[in-house]
Length: 257
Image 1 (cartoon, rainbow, N blue to C red):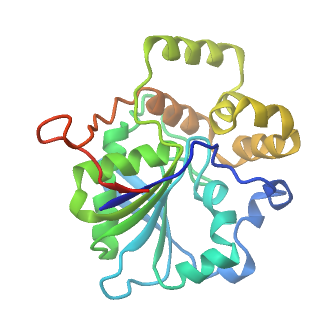
Image 2 (image 1 turned 90 degrees about the horizontal axis):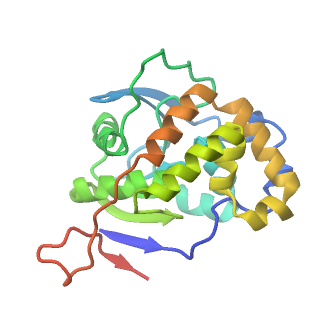
């Protein structure tokens, strides 16, 4: 299993503002072969969108989005690029929405315990089993990168490769935790999430793009469910990976650059 690592840049693509006028634009008319599934797992239901059928022993491409987004907001522009379609026509593509983050999701009831980040990773084998996938190539952004990395650490035999964008493998320290709590008191949830998705420079210089994302986060994702996911992501623990050779029997991911 290999991990492909990219430079530390915010994941949202420049120039998307013209493509985000409404949630209906995320899937083009040519993408009518996407099929939606609700899959039962040990930690609750997962909403999954899939295109294609397994091709021999090839792995499936499985994506996991960042906090504040869902598979449409996070990946549809990327997967609609012509060059990317040249790749994906050879693989089945499976988009996973974190619990309650998909468009039109019902609000979780009062007192609902959102799955931990470890639980989110442990839900994915049910997806592979449901569709008969043997292995996957994971593509994750932000919180989704963390979930896929945790999944690869727990189930390495199910992962052939990872593309992890803007992964933070560390849990929040006390200072970060306090800053997050203070931000939650003084800012709306969409604005708090935007500070996670964009750098301060991008927030200042790409106001139209940021405003489009603010509108989409507010209208396409249930805000109560988003708050639960956001809280759980901020409660994550360290991935506890070590470089080979530094610790006996180190738990790690092999990588290429």
